[in-house]
Amino acid sequence: MPDWVPARRREIGARIRTARRDRSLSQVELGERIGRDHKTVHRYEYGTRVPNLEDLLLIADALDIPLADLVG
Image (cartoon, rainbow, N blue to C red; front, side):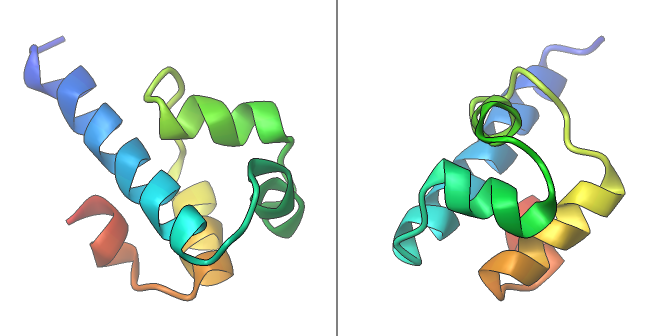
């Protein structure tokens, strides 16, 4: 795997975390909105797990932001 992939994954996670915090949501609350547990949300935010496209779409919808803003 190229070195830039994990860095990019962490960047996307940071965008999810920032958007979630901007909306005053906890990881538990975001997890409930997307049908995942808070541990999974944590793993997405810190880049230790890769969200699939469906989860990215659910996250963008739950946070009311365009998908492009998460992966941009």
